[in-house]
Length: 394
Image 1: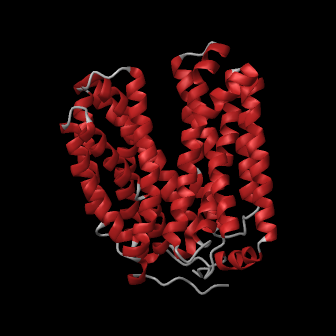
Image 2: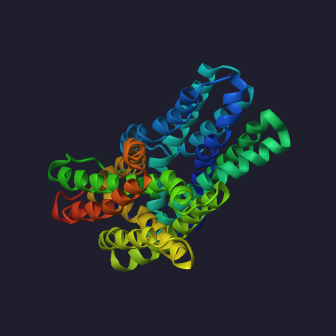
Image 3: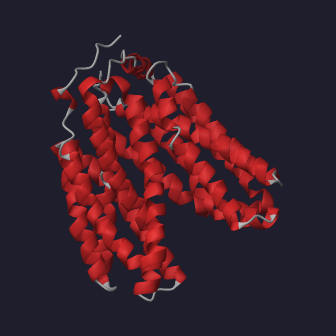
């Protein structure tokens, strides 16, 4: 793959804003489920299925768009994906039926899924310092997810039951920014040519890619599991109230986002594979110590280190995948982001069954071991240079 030798700040900024805009919808949906439940008199199962529809179609289906982006120039899908994700989410303001809600969430999820593979491909080429560029792109998604609940509550405070309509505004604004960035940046034409690499047979690269994906699944299961079970752990084992438990989760996510950025800079210096291995191994003692510490300064210290080291690997795993499949970088990005998030949700669901039978503490203890499995598996996922070389640029 041809890497740009200049830093394209304009396009990278637009891509980060696009990532914020699409993931804003994902972050906002859980916050309005109680409102939708009351409006349409839904059951808890029906309410949960709305969120599952968004999660499934915004993550698992990403490899389809990754496959397409590796064969055709899909730069146009970036503003279109942002518009579809935002506008169809905004239309939830008018729905009064469960089936129509599922349809709108499904289409919005397709917009989210369409954006990620092409966005990750172009972010990779925005700078010769690839891991740093990718870390900023990933932080955009983290920020969008975190901002979603706050933003949607603010919109409902202003417009009541039609508050989701305001989510069309950032979608429109960011789509225009993306179009302008791609049109007015001379380097974008060079990047589009660099993205056109003739895909070659997977061959011997299947094994390292499969191993990396398996390693990422363990990592994603822990990240998602902590998001779900940390509040329950705080309330059951530390005597925290709901506000304190929510604050712990916010602390975990905020420090994790900072870790994503810091991790990009460190991985750029020492290499993404080495950084991934070091980080996932460090997560285990950090998480073990915060489980052994009952509140206080050191509890927050070890929890913060857990979140920072765990989420710091986001950009590294993306670059590692695209190093293994440089001729299929869209598919590599889709597998790392989409499949890992989807599998993380499945893993967390399985852990939920364990919690129902044996309690949350056992689940937290089990998750401490996940990074060790992740690191052990990733150790055998060797760099692409030891396998098939990418085809020459077209």
